[in-house]
Image 1 (tube, rainbow over the protein chains, first blue to last red):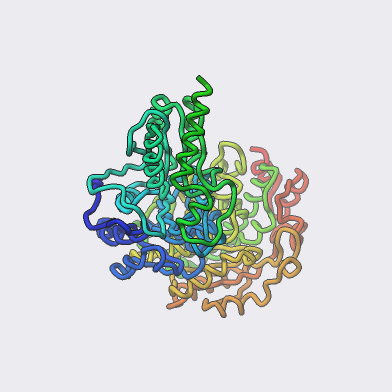
Image 2 (cartoon, chains in turn brown, cyan):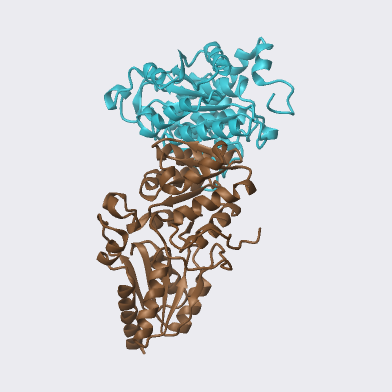
Length: 325
Length: 300
């Protein structure tokens, strides 16, 4: 295991997660001699064009045929290669059964990296916005599911998933992201971290919602509410120890994700919390609906997953907690 | 030469071995008896499509596939993927014949705790190369193996057997296109073309004709043979092994249920079916078993 600290020069503010992934993968490729990257004609959209340019001999073009690509990744891994399957989240869902049988069931060391998840896709509209990918991949036995929060964390997670032995599904992102972490940030699969301490409520978020949860904590502070913010980049296996601690110390939770409220981060958190010490939880995410066209920030507002909605959910959670006492 | 432990490839050995076809016929006979018995014992399974590919697998394991029981994880080995995973009783039987697994234990098909599941699973049996059972997927995975071997400059071949109904899966044609595009001449596929699928004839369900033209149009080297004629099967494998720059397709014309007269040519035996004692015995008699052998297969 190498020292997984943030690489300099990757993840300047405004870099998208897909850019951070593509650049970091290109940078560290030499450390993984059997690495091969599979693409379904979307390299320019996934950050993989950086890799293709630098390592054309390790780049495999499959054309617009995700089912074949995902199953073939299982075959490549069977011969000792280390395949990264790269694509848009919604189209990788098309190969769900291949991921289930030929990667999950066969337990192949394949990394599925999905750009364009959630509302973050924006103007392409509802057809292209995967809002159920975390739920779907989380349900495959043995599949690790990751959604990093910023470019630095994405770069760190890129190395971490390559060093990890087992199937992984990881989200990146299309739009310009907020840089949350500096070069001292650490990432470990299965571990969340407290970004801001607080005692009234814990806001648990992943992906683009982490920055919004941080903003929500500021809004709550203005109201005199002391909110804790937890970054939860690994949705499976979820950090149950940290969640248990947050329940004990803050008594209620809000989850925030760019995903349907069913089956994603919120569900994973609820499963863990009810197992150990139930408490009020409010869920911020898509209320069992598809997306639509619009700019990512407009959509976030429209579908009520921005900071003010997270803050409002926190107030509801606190009220429910108080009602119990 | 793929496997260091073996000075000769199976094809080379077969070429200098005049009795090879008789050996393959004997293996195929055992395979048919074994698969009928295991499906009878399981009280479910797919005998029709298992019987139709018995000669293909017997020829493949007997004279082509460079894979040995004492070296199942040798990176240099040839790979075989049974994409029509429901025909796994045939795979278990031929594997048992060649010593990859125990002949008695492998009769314990589709039972709780048995590694011989209703569709083959790579985590259960070390000589199964990937888990199959969802039609089309084994073909794609096998293609990935052929790519991986080429990338690592390993001079081994990948073989796969598909069912004809499997042609209706769209992903098969994704793999067909991709294999030709990447010029995977280390990749050899056999279609067990018994013309029948679960419910009825292919042509009644969703027609495949003209199957050979389809594969030629997709850029494959296509051979059309009698899938029950061992010398034709072996010749086709030899042609495939010397084809350069494109993948090979062997369309093996077969008879569903081949070897058990009451099953031959009837989609009723596609499965999953329960064989009665009488049906199993009748089948074994047709396959040349004497009373003692029948008891051995069905009872012991």
